[in-house]
Image 1 (cartoon, helix red, strand yellow):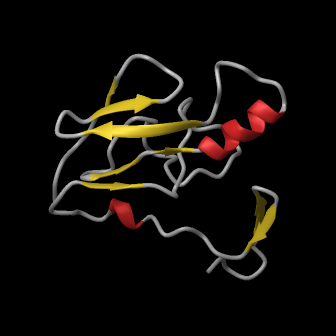
Image 2 (cartoon, rainbow, N blue to C red):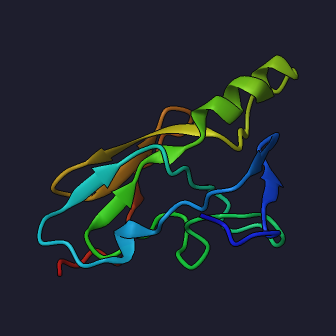
Length: 116
């Protein structure tokens, strides 16, 4: 829970809970997740970002999130954008640890993988 009086507004809602950064704990196997979305362009000053201490294509030890907010891209398309999307659908090729996006041709190597 957020301490009393410290609630915050993000993504169109008032928040009273923080997301626990559980992925910062050591893991003994590679773990690929979604839901905790990331930004391909990295951290934006003044915006809440649960991955704020990691580059956009880096592992947190043995945990990697492939969610780059494809829902945001849906909104971008509704606004008429046709390329250079901010949001994207990501997929990770294993064991190479290469990241692919549905709107880009080249694979992006991930960085910083390590187990517990």
